[in-house]
Image (cartoon, rainbow, N blue to C red; front, top):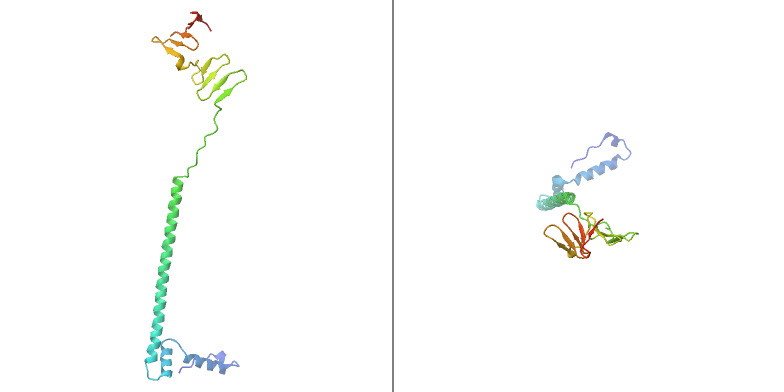
Length: 187
């Protein structure tokens, strides 16, 4: 039986006897290999049965600690790999979103009214781009030339054309003749 060393400060204290008894008691119940051998010697002197039973219990506890450590390490590795995979997936999604921004529905700006009316009686048909003057004359707003409905125009081989709606023959040189009267129309 080993007695724990007592410090000099402890020997001068009022309670030195109690400290000595506590040290003796703690040395008798030491852990590890020596504690196991001491407990075997006290319970059945000369028998290794209790020593082996205690050793097996300690071995089982150490194996359980090793198994828990391995399981925890595996779980940590899986958790870290999942976090890394999720981070990579988020980075790829952010990169794809930056390269392909979300499409929004296009709503065209409000266009012109189909027909615009003016105070003098003139109107513009914005779908066919034809301006009709108060006197009935029609002008193509894209070319600025007088408009003739293609259904009422008869084209001649020499470049002249006949407006059957207004009964006006326009010659290739631009001369206009009233087909009803045969007179030339001057502007």
